[in-house]
Length: 189
Ligand code: 5GP
Image 1 (tube, rainbow, N blue to C red):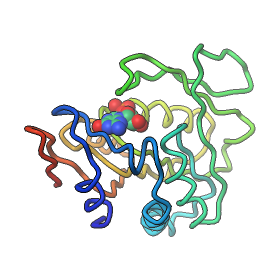
Image 2 (image 1 turned 45 degrees about the horizontal axis):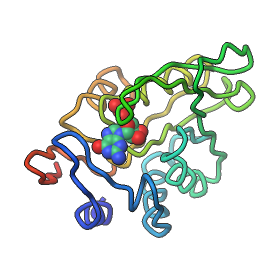
Image 3 (image 1 turned 45 degrees about the vertical axis):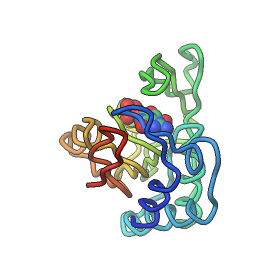
Image 4 (image 1 turned 120 degrees about the vertical axis):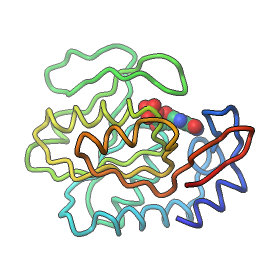
């Protein structure tokens, strides 16, 4: 997605060979026009699949997932992060390592909002090692819902997440792929 690449070039701050800060558009502030355009791209990719629900993880996935849900006219459900593993029988809960925070967090979705009648697209801001997406995929599978695919705004393709999830047979669509952040330079695939 050319517009997203342009914005990343404008506002992206390379923090290390592995991490890019995109606070201005994804992780601290929201550009409504860009977010709407990202939602339209996701909707275009998955429109023919009979999507009934968009699922994401709080908090940075919510604006882009909302934009996609709005475009597809389906509800959005966001997994919530909990400090302690919730043993509540009314929720699906999974423990995932957090790439940026260097700790584990527990994500949970109430059984009320996901079930076997759902046809789901998972949307998130970044994919790095893929732990967040895999955790949410486990929740979606446990609910009996059909996973149609994963939509990611920024895939860092020099990390293994996107590739390994594709290899497991899940459709993964990224709006942009960053192939390297070495030497402070953003390289797109
Ligand atoms: P993963 O679980 O795929 O290793 O990491 C995905 C999560 O970590 C994303 O939801 C995102 O919040 C965060 N993340 C991973 N890499 C980056 C990065 O380079 N920049 C920012 N801002 N967040 C990242």
